[in-house]
Length: 213
Image (cartoon, rainbow, N blue to C red; front, side, top):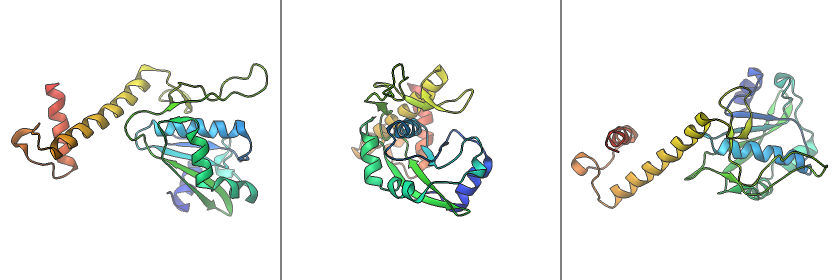
């Protein structure tokens, strides 16, 4: 989980990054707000190395954010509650950590999201505002990512480059799993049949495989 100094640097940067999404202060009981947080979590899970969703930030002026109220904060730091609610929308599940972090006496909630374990995460349930004509915030079957072009945001895959980035990450994971499983089983798929001693050796083997596929 990030430290106070790291959060201070993120806020001082004064804008979102692909690995960081800001959400303003909001109540856990506000379903529309929670759906937007969930969309950000799903998008971060589909990103290499995951990312952070930081709640309590004024995204128009992050460096001047005043954080969350004590009541809001106390609800948002309950990991079990947050994880259970996110799980209603994530397929497969998403690994998260939740913590309260203070900067200049202002309190923020940081949701740290791990990248997906094996396959990309899809949304498995709709959420749309109850008002007539309200657009879906979460759409069943959608694959959310952090945009690679234009405004940085969490959105459904919209470009071939975003799709390729996600598929490349999934392919790397599958290759890694296959090579490690084969090595444990004693199946030689690399010169000499020796074990991988370190990460660098594994990366070299992936490079060799790429030329033979």
